[in-house]
Image (cartoon, rainbow, N blue to C red; front, top):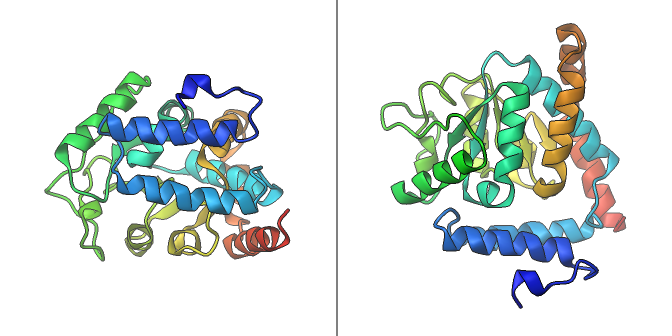
Amino acid sequence: MPASDVPTSHPRYLSLMAREKIVHGVERGITSPHGLIAHGRGEAFDYLLGERTHAFAGAAVEAGCAMLLTAQWPVISVNGNACALAAEEMVALANVCGAKLEVNIFHTSAEREQAIRGALLEAGAREVLMPSRTHALEHIESNRRWINPAGIYRADVVCVPLEDGDRCGALIRNGKRVVTVDLNPLSRTARAATVTVVDNLTRCLPLMVERCEALKNDSKTRLTEIAAAWNNHSALTAAEEAMRRGT
């Protein structure tokens, strides 16, 4: 069934539209076919959340936004799935918190990196940084180790929606704070990150843009206190309990 034929009253409408975005991303060369599997896995966890944003996710959004707004050099790392699902929202978040956008993918492909860059520019980005073969993260050997010297290499806070566990751990070991979006509270990424938003990317990114807008005029002292008070372990525990209850 073409996306245009799905009625908005369909109980799976939002989920089906997200699937269409991922499929379209593959067709445009933005998303790897492997990303289809990753997206389906995330959907399963979203079912357990009741496909809604919980209080623990809202609190994580607040802490993550405070961290981005107080960063000296914030960067948003963009992979194929994130770009296909929410390119405009990531551009909006970068604009409101003053972050750089940087392309970073697992499955090596210069063509796909350029496709992601093009999609972000189409979505309104003024600048999109690309991986450099001169600068690399330590403690990781995959393609995701290659980073831009003016972006992730220099960053103190990196927002990495839909991240893989190896690189999240490497970012932390390289002294960076990580804000991630991950529907699986048991994943390596969720457990390694500084702030984990356990929520669907398409639901929480608009909330992050909204909260950054609301918080950006607050004092740096207050924002620092919000970020420092965050307890990621407690939030992950709350997310797991919600999934076990099925609420």
